[in-house]
Image (cartoon, rainbow, N blue to C red; front, side, top):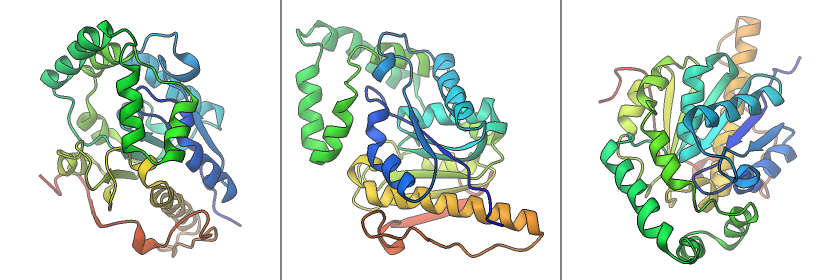
Length: 282
């Protein structure tokens, strides 16, 4: 009997929407997995709503409920922080956690500075910063990724509320509550990886994956490599389920969907990796 493989719920980053996950959703579905991307409050189809920490966690909880009540939860940047917070509050819903681009503690001074810039400088611009946002997207993302991100619209007015909400986030404490396997995924040139070893040390069952050539939005700038990380995470969860059910040791992982249109070779994915638990890193 095939091992049960959990569905995947994907949580987007700040100012973007669920459309940023097009490449991953299509790839996972071609590989036979169930994948659902959600919108957080204040973003995408929920842009009229106010972003709050509780509201964002509720959105993730509802997204997991919609696919059966337990999932591999994947978050990028803001979505990574929300996925971690959700896992700390609802560990029973989390078969595994992939937190990408969010290995920096939410320092109050940084949050205040970003919030002040959003509520002050950008709010006073005639276009509320749309031209600056579009220029950054065009310069930092591949054309297809830029199109995917833009499809759901940009939440230009959500930053101030988000920075205020993030003051209540406690990612290190939340990670310490998660018993499910955790993958911390960062681009090599991600400016949010400064505390990655502390985040890894906080995990009970964590591993660190660094994707070569990638910047902060790793799923968009290296979609094939990021998809491979998700497929390998699903393989590991299935192997654990088989081993637990049969009382056997670790089952070797296989990649039945190793299609060059879908994923790259394993050697292309990880430049460096580490695995550890609480107290294994400082």
